[in-house]
Length: 584
Image 1 (cartoon, rainbow, N blue to C red):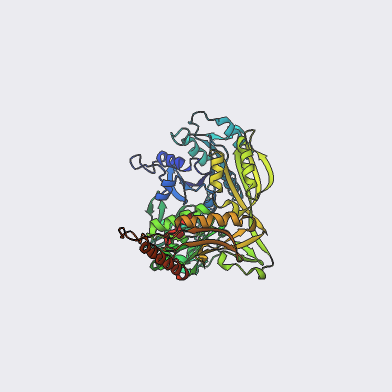
Image 2 (image 1 turned 90 degrees about the vertical axis):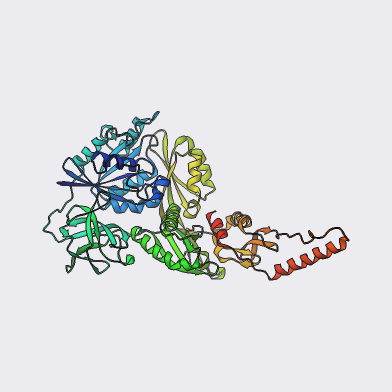
């Protein structure tokens, strides 16, 4: 049978997973009795949030053709997942929601697909929705791809209208894999992997040439390690054990290797004892956002380390290294592709591995004297600093024109620099701004959605590092510096951010037997202050009647005790407070 390998790419919530569900039903891959919504979204987290986080391959058979589909995420934080899946296929279904039109990730994913020279099949989804201008969305998509309106397909993934037509178009237009000769030496590209306690690392592969049998031995070229195959097979969509894999197919190989850190996405698998030229792998993703993860229970550090290694196996964009802080103990400084990525990783650790975490607020990497600084604890003394720089990105916002004025107003407070405006249609525009990354990683996306009633979308790409007037802000609790709360801020926003932080601490830190001063300090100068009042105890409550002098003596004694406590006392910040403050 001939093979067709393809992906579905789209902006978040445009119907990728629903279309995949219809494909599974039409091809009989999953029976109607076993069918459930978002079938390929295997994580509870994906179902709860209604988004795809992990790519998921599945093999279908339709009209005597083998169709290998890779369902991909749509959120900007998971674009690396998309880029890896595109390297394993020859075609892409570009899906656009008829009610929302072209969005930021539509453009970003299309650009990735074009770089891989994939065949693009344009599809407008949700034509069943009432009061939807399908023709306008078709016109937008045709204009974007420079094709005729008749070449854009219209479907409803929800009720299945015209979905079978898309399968036929995939067979007709997507080219089959090249180099299908079984006589070639076996080579396979790892595009994803998971860990199994019995089978070791299970590599998801695209077989580029030759064939492999389950009795063969394998070698990973970049890692330089060998292994015995425990199992190989297809995704239907669960693992389905087979006797062999051949050129052009997408499948899995259980390597038996029990060291997750040794196997990397982009490595080449060959038969044991054979040396070949490695396949072109993947460009390593650059982390954009940094946060620290610490186990709430210090004894869970080794469990957290094991969890991080296993997550790294299936998510190569996760970067981490150990770090120690006096107040929190041992943990990890982690790099993420964005704040949603950080949120997903922390939730997976808590759910899948049962480890409660303390998480620092996300930040970006700065440059001081040309050297990257990832946290306030690495900041140099001001007298030694010659120059400071921060990362800037190109921000693209797609929105209906009626919300553009409000969006441009809010961007003024984010130190954004206007670049240009493009028009997708008379009703929809693309704003281009250059903006410091720091300004948009926290809460900006939520504000944008709120301002545009959910219609605006955004995407950003790294530009460069630029000079910035940055300062280190420390937090003093009862006169003692709490380094975990230190942060790097623009000097002009120091008061605003310091005030917000000490107020949050006042709300979350338990009261003590003495009053506690909370101060935001820059270079010895207090820029914001709050005070937690002492917890009061009624020391005269047991007295009944009598002279007031006795009550006064007891109150004076209490006052002296609190003064002594204040002079000697040290406030211990509970893990719960760190968690509440870092959540923002």
